[in-house]
Length: 272
Image (cartoon, rainbow, N blue to C red):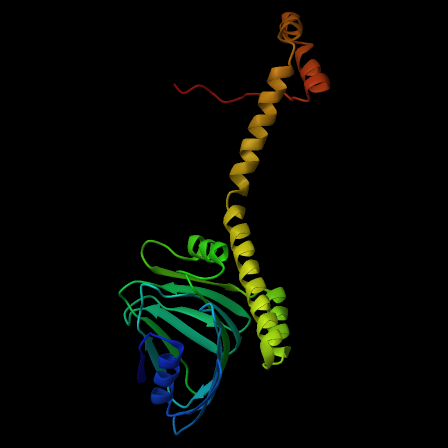
């Protein structure tokens, strides 16, 4: 297995590290980066865009001729990365000995690593891997409200956060929309930035929904209990007692017709 290492830092430093590790040719124009790679052990390209508020967008299209691990230095100011896999497989672990999670075609992931342990990516040999990476800052930014929601939803005290799940078709449509926008001019930059913000808002919304969904059974139980309490509050106990006075013959009929309650027989034997 070929082992590579990337230092964290500015976008320039990251792409220069990628250039050295992959032996590629780097071209830059304004905030656009493209690394073309053609070597004995890998081929493909890595493209990236850096926006003025520390938002990052990258696309990887690679095929390795041997298994590769890429260790990425952690940073306490590390952004939250949203990852969308279009083809192939890539695995991730926190540290070389950590548990691996695999991201496959049509899956998405959310990753944040602000701990002292590096993130490690693993690539299979002779298999084309294509994935998109969107990085959102967790510290100061122009959009403080969005950053606050990102930090609240996708970071934790341990500094190691990862989620892997099924891709969202609506987000895939947004990514296609992003790629269709021309790279030239401030208007195009603003439009692409708005699309990325929309994607992040969709991520926050769907993860918030998934979080609340786990409480649905509890909420349903609580709602049923409240309904029963409401029934009790409207019950005419004098009427119920009177019905029970006739040897209980009229009680089940009264409870069912007026209060929608059904008495079930209780056949449990007493323990000896």
